[in-house]
Structure formats: C-alpha cells, structure tokens
Amino acid sequence: DNAIKKSMPLFGKKVMVTAGPTYEVIDPVRFIGNHSSGKMGFAIADELVKLGADVTLVAGPTSLQADKTLKRINVVSALDMFNACTSIFSETDITVMCAAVADYRPKTVANQKIKKQDGDFILELEKTTDILASLGKSKKSNQILVGFALETNDEENYAKGKLEKKNLDLVVLNSLNDKGAGFKSDTNKITIFNKALEKTAFELKSKAEVAKDICEAILKITK
Ligand code: CTP
Ligand code: CA
Image (tube, rainbow, N blue to C red; front, side):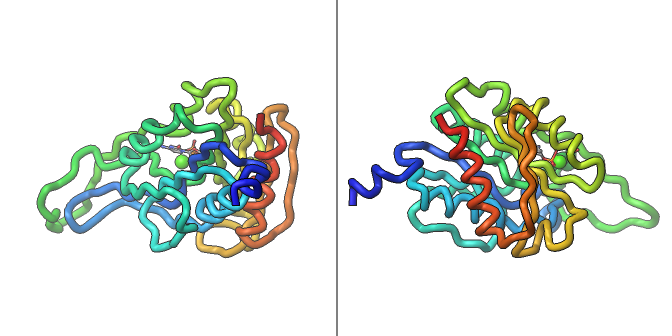
C-alpha cells in the first residue's frame, strides 16, 4: 500500500533508462545494428521499479519484456532514441543510458531495395548525435546521469574519459575482455567510476545482480 511505497528508497523519483541496440535503416530490407540484447538495461529498469522509482524505459528493438508497471517507449533508430530521451530528460531525476546507440547511420536511405552490382559497394555513413553527451550538456545540478563505456582495450582510461567528457556522475565500464561479460550473455562483470574517479570493481554476476550493484551506486549519490 501507500505507506510501504513511500518508504521505498526511490519513491517519487522520475527515472529514465535506455536499453538495447538501435537499428539504422539502409533500405527497405536492411539495417545496421549491433549485438546488444537489452538484457542489462531491462534488468536495471526492473530493479529501479523495485526500489520504488517512476521508471520510463526507452527501448531499442528487442523481444524482451520489462516489468509491466513501468512506462515503455519503443524506438528503432538513434534519432528516435535521441528524440524520446530529450523530450523527457528535463523532468527526470536519474537517467541511466545503457543502450548501445549506433555511432553512424547511412547518409541516405534508399526507398527501394538496393540491387547488387558487379564489384564492391561503398555505403556512406554519417555520425549520429551522442545522446548521452547531449544530455550531459543540459544536465542540472540536481540531476544524476549514468553512462556506460564498452571497451576492448585501455578500458579504464577510456571509461574515465567518457565520464568527464560527457559530464556524468557515474560511468559503468563493461570490458569485452572479461569472460562471461558483454552482449548476449546472462552475466556481466563491471567496474564503476564516480565523479571523483574512485573505482569499484565487481565480480562476474548475473545481470540482475549487476543491476543491483549499479542501483546501489546510484542510491549512494542520490540527493
Ligand atoms: N551513447 C549515446 N549516443 C551515441 C553513442 C553512445 O548516448 N550516439 C552512450 C551510450 O549509451 C553509453 C555511452 O554513450 O552510455 C558510451 O558509449 P560507447 O559506445 O562506449 O562510447 P562512445 O562515446 O560512443 O565512443 P566509442 O564507441 O568510440 O568508444
Ligand atoms: Ca559508440
């Protein structure tokens, strides 16, 4: 009931979580995507619901089902996700940007299926907007912004660089070098850096357990 809800640690907090890949259309039958399953972001969204937050999940293409009580906005492309995120960001207290957003999209979209030709095919790509960096620019002092860093090499330096460049409060490092970590897996191994660049390294765990660790780190800095 209400008294129990009010005693939950994130009661009354508006939270946005993004999850999954984005698909960038090439022509009516093809797209550029990535291996993100959405599992990590969905686990975080579910955990935030359990903590009492008012959660909006912005989800790229995935067949996953989230907690039925949260608000879900389905998107396809990086541009769709940018539009969804920017339209609600100013009202959110906490944002967790877990989606694997495409960095590039085809410069033009073909209306008809592109037919194969003799020889090679060159597809011109243009940069997408960095959603997280853009949210970081408009972030107010009472808002918490959490980003991810997916790395294969020089992981900690890249992660800390993203924390600073994108004006984050926490960065969650996902190293693809860790066995059992990453995209399709049900487990993950993360390291979190806070604004003071203090490092917390976690063991390999289920994504549900990793979500709890991430939420605990968020609770520690929640105003
Ligand atoms: N991100 C985003 N919009 C993009 C690209 C990335 O919001 N167009 C966010 C991701 O959701 C993630 C963080 O930025 O929270 C880091 O993503 P990552 O791919 O690790 O880093 P990039 O900054 O894109 O740099 P690179 O891929 O070159 O390592
Ligand atoms: Ca990227």
